[in-house]
Image (cartoon, rainbow, N blue to C red):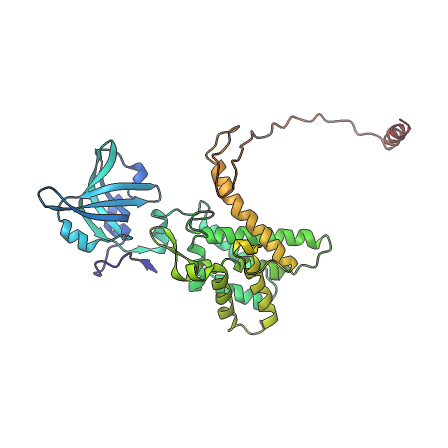
Length: 369
């Protein structure tokens, strides 16, 4: 799959490596310096066509990548490039970095739209800080532990790396801004929630709870699948029309119902339980959840999902704060967080073992006292 942007200039385009040649990998925006000649690839965030006082057209572009944005000026050939380049295009640029009003700026000598495959989107959009391939293998492993065969087939149809839906799931963001809002974020969040549910299932089963582990893990892996249709990954993560009108919960229920139609042995009653986990995972009606959790599995899923959605931004927020300091107030978390110093573990002196008779005497002395 390739990512071609706005569709300007339908002639066959070069890819990133074809354009840059020996300059690949090119300098990211955060690495640019005054006076540097650049051959690079950037995402067009904005394009403005203007005219000089002499009525000569020029273009002012906002170009960016995962490290930031920079203004770029096209003084020559503006009309042709205006027709060729649009917002959301990834373009190859040859130019020179200068300074204007104490800010870096690129003077574009030539530019052309490029073809971009999904695997290269991480150059231009924020990406999961963890190894996506390792996460993907862990998703495969967890699916393989589901012993209920119809449920496992449902997971493979929705999340398997060989399906179009599964490949999209593994690249997609989990949110627009609040948590896991980066490429691969949906897979990272889903896997984290599912692993937490798996551990919680073992914990509560050990306490005598009747929890269907396969159902819980399947519901956890599918709880946010509707986000592949709710969100689009363009120059920024935005909501689709479907996402705005229906939301990811309804879309997720629809996806699972459609994929379940071709799975023999998946009973309507079993499918209904999976759909309840999806419908109730946000937990509260005031949080846009159609239903509150009405099964043990649904309760576990809701709390694991809510915790993970808060831990992700909390961990990121603390990463830039010195020990002994507070973070700025975070509106999503509704608090500032404190970063305590790591514990100083004193070496515990080794004690001589107490003989059984002596230990008994000590206990008696305590009772007598």
